[in-house]
Every structure is written in structure tokens, then in C-alpha cells.
Image (cartoon, rainbow, N blue to C red; front, side):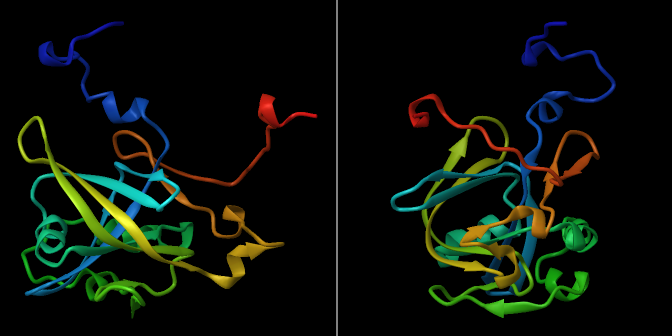
Length: 195
């Protein structure tokens, strides 16, 4: 099968996000004039090491984007399997001023380097300063770039000096209503690292 996006795919559901899978989920927390906000975004990734930088994209000018533009800061917490129901609950389209931390029963903690809340029990959280908001083609598509100014790692996820994702089983987004949980890891040695 081949299709041009502008012509449509002819399938009952759009396959685009199902092809790019699994995608990590950024559980983005912000603080704005109307209070704290917490929402998941599955177009998310790390994009640079030095300085460490991350990105996430939003379809629509959601409360997260508005708060980030106003304050210049945001936090990204990693979603573990134990928090998947709370993450899903925080994904709703709620009126401005809704506190998704409270609504989803998620404990918050204050960040160290920025004036922003974070998910207290998350396996890891990046504290971020906004570097750029890029308006993408299409209706209300935004790319948010940030520099990581602080990193929280939950102690039980550190094993032998490494951050071990099997300790918390990260949740990833697939297409449609599908999600995945990371339960198995394997290692491969790159050609330039071989003896």
C-alpha cells in the first residue's frame, strides 16, 4: 500500500502514529495564572547531550503550551506502568484552571531549578527552560524545545550506577488507542566499539 497524506489513506483509522512506535510519553507539568497543569504528550524525545535538550509537540494550543510561553519553564516526568491510569486521566480536555494533579490523584513536588511542579513519584523528571516554540505547518501544531536544567532520578531506579528502566516499566504510546510497556532489554555493541 502507498498513499499521499494529502489524498488520504482510505483506511478506517489513520496509520501515521501507529507506524512511529513505540513513542515515549512526556508527562508535562506547568504552572500558569490559573494554577498547575499536567498533561501527557507522545510526540516527545531527547534531542541533544550537551547541553541536554528535549522536545515535545502539541496539536492545538493547549494549556501546557500557553503556560510554557508565559513562564518559560516546564517539567517532563517519565510515565511508569503503575501510573498509566493516572496519566490517561490527565489526558482529558478539561477547562482552563483544572488541576490534573488533583483530578488524577497524582502527588506533586516542587522543582529545584525552576518554579514549576513535577510528578513526585515519577521514575525520572527533567526540569526544563524553554528555548523555542516553533509553529509547524498545519492547524495549531507546535514544537516546544527546552534545555534541561535539573534531573530527578528515583533512587530505586538506579542499579549499579545505571538508570534501569526495567525497575519501573516505562509506558510508551503506539497508534490508535494502543500503548506498550517496556519489559525486556538487550544490548548490542556498535561496530566502532568492538575490540
